[in-house]
Length: 145
Image (tube, rainbow, N blue to C red; front, top):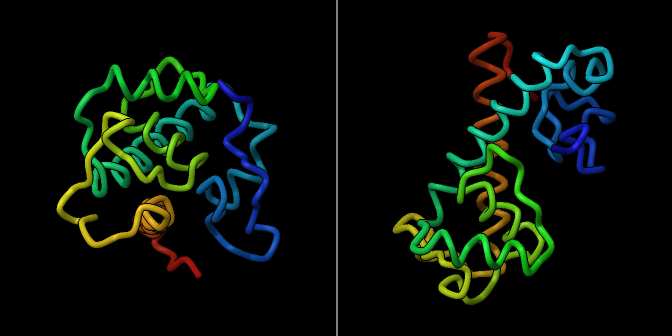
């Protein structure tokens, strides 16, 4: 597992309450180095669950073995708790929407039928951000900006 969810695109620096890069809450970004292992694990789990739910809106896994083979060919090492949806997110992030989803063991959901392949990851990432924003607002009763 990586040490931090940070992907180097931090928008909390500009005042966002939820980072547009890693989707952590601003207080998690600033407090990360002081967190106990249990706190970090809880954040990682929330991010994984939100990310996987966002992916599930847009793609379906037809063949998980093919999916993980594709991840390995891209030198993506899955974390121990990864699902196929986690692998799909990382593959699509790195390839910015593979034009041939079948070669990855994936198909589009009905929700993603009209989205161009190159725009698929952006739609998934926006859904991930929307889910992170909703989680923030639900837990802190403060509207995110």
